[in-house]
Length: 300
Image 1 (spheres, rainbow, N blue to C red):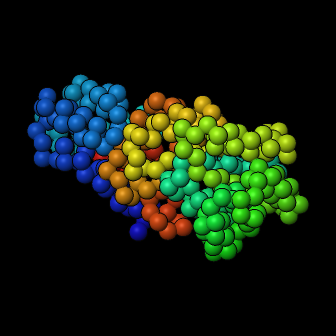
Image 2 (image 1 turned 90 degrees about the horizontal axis):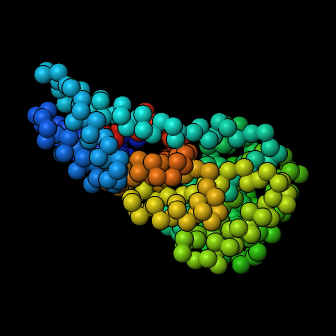
Image 3 (image 1 turned 90 degrees about the vertical axis):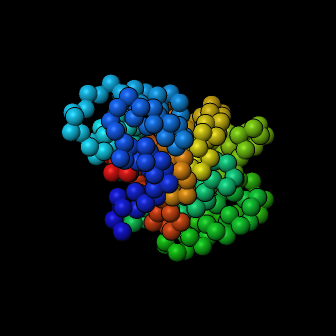
């Protein structure tokens, strides 16, 4: 299956709502309302949904316009909205020795799996990634990361259970310098956004990283579960303010009808989307492509 086919398949649950609102419908004043309702149901948010629906209502379609014409127009409007937040993260990791990536997020969002998938992409493109199992309080996360590191041929640094995560990260970056690993990807323990004590531990990790390299971490990535839809806003809001976030990875888009949430997230927080998760295999993390997303979400 080609990459666009996989993305289209992953967003099928979302696109069905939007596509049904257009397919077989007469192009009249009611169409815009139908599309607005479908976008809201897909969790695109009221503001974005109303804005897109207004553009549909204001568009003077020719009398012989088809469903496809409406879909193309809507896809282009979505593309224009989200294109500024497309960032080729995997092609812009350089200039540091090593390049340090801090991966954060709430428990259950697919953080540890995403770390392995990120490492896999870098490994395939010729980098020498080191993954750091800094979720020292969850043995299953460490074992999971060890399994994937061996599978993809990446180096891993893991400490003893309940070890100090900040200390482990510090020694891991120094090890990367010695061993020639050009990318360091740090998996952290899941943090509920309403736990100040746990967020303080993340702040400590960032401070310790800067002791090795004042410019690091070079990217802090927040993992968002696509199944949560609009509820993801609370997570982005807190992590952005407390820790700092350079970009998002949105996982589990293959299992949700809420794939429109990407639109409301970028509009509200102006935060780039680095990649999307479109399946469970190690290769099912894809750099975000605004055109592929906008076409897939309307069922093109």
